Image 1 (spheres, rainbow over the protein chains, first blue to last red):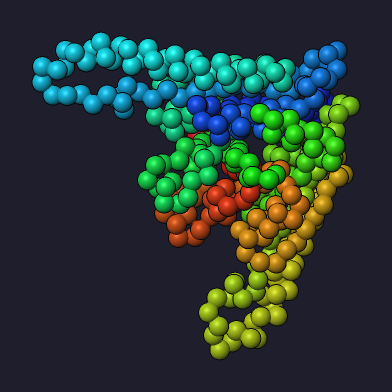
Image 2: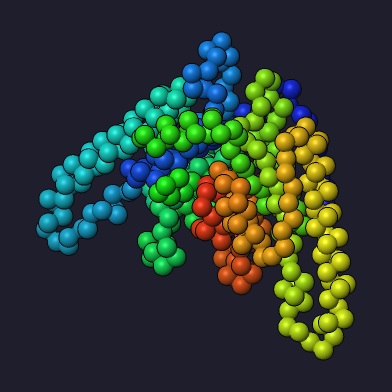
Length: 179
Length: 172
């Protein structure tokens, strides 16, 4: 049982790279707000002469790959789908941009700088991969508060991340009514 | 978004938010405590940490450890009891040392007897914690199903945000 003594940082709190997974759901935006309030405090209306970045905030949005949504009809209808594919992709891209803008807006309101990354693929895996690539210190995900059976059927990104991410995972639950 | 404004206001008025860290005898949980102290409670110039730390150690009940009562169970009980007490004291001592080495003074330590899962969720309720921090053994799916996972249980049942800190797997 060895205890590695980390050298005490002479500057303030060690800079953390915090990755927040965002999508259209209210849960993830609440998670973002929670993370901003608790992990990047003292940025609100604080002393403007102390521009200490408390860490690096990265917003990650996973865009579902197209195969998910398009059911390829077999046969001659295949030609028709190429324009459908295009318009669906455009709609998806626009959707992702909206989500990211909304999230960035929340950060801006709290005077926190955020980077945004859009990844394409299955949310569970791509979020964990992205977190790994960015050498995240903390991955923040929202949680829909699904029951056990629903989790098994619908799948849970927060569950997957909790098990498979290489870094610490923060799961933010939606606020219970009457908090 | 009025709820957030309310929350933020409430937090600043009431004081610090509470962070509960669950620890036991394992290295993983001490790693979690260490990580938390490092990232949330470093000696920050000027501003103190926004969290009040409560360290909770769950002491398993002797009966749960012994399992099925056999003919000799009654005799073994006192020994198991004192062993468990020693272990939990040692755990708390180590946690105290860690906190002082990171110069964190505003800490509460608790030892509660019972199953870790329930103990931690109840501690969250009791202290109205904002966040619960647990370590993770990093079990695979099968081990989790068989041995059970405190971090899993807490992630689903605690009424607050849950942070699961894992020891990074040595990949390189």
